[in-house]
Length: 229
Figure 1 (tube, rainbow, N blue to C red):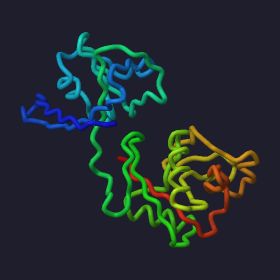
Figure 2: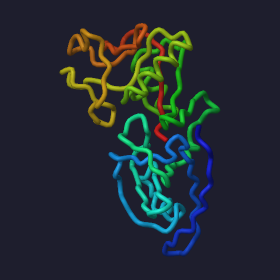
Figure 3: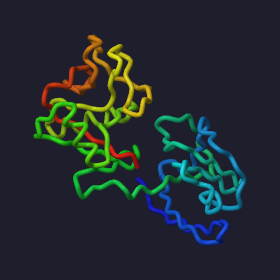
């Protein structure tokens, strides 16, 4: 459960203007000390002052009330992926993401900090899918963790979708896959015999467990867009 908490922050800048930032408490991380998530560590007098240091690259933070220790992270902290221990005094927060356009079919998953849209029935090949996403200011979705893979598996099954195009391609036809910003894939979920040939340069989720296959991108399929928030 995530409970909304408004932290109204007075930040001293050159013009001495007020800067108001809204954070959301990650309540499942109450009393959790995130051992691997060192981040940027500073000493502040309050959680408000801790949040005042949450700049444009900051995604989440943790604060300890007794030691006045503030940890600033450039990723979304989660007890599912980080080593932790129970310790009184810790609270964690994330930025509130209000820019996921749910009015045009996008879904915002707060626990994964993920804004995505399933597009069905258009019978687009990979180029058509990419162009459609781009018109939304989006790209084909990045399945970059097992948590995202499992979530997308459940979501596609519940919507009766057999296969989808997702982000990632082997531009040099060498079975080395990258996203469209040239970031290499850090997580994959290939089927046992995949990727099967170097000329099949796009990624498809298919089958009961939506394992990954590579294909030429010529077949019409449903697809999933993602907007970075």
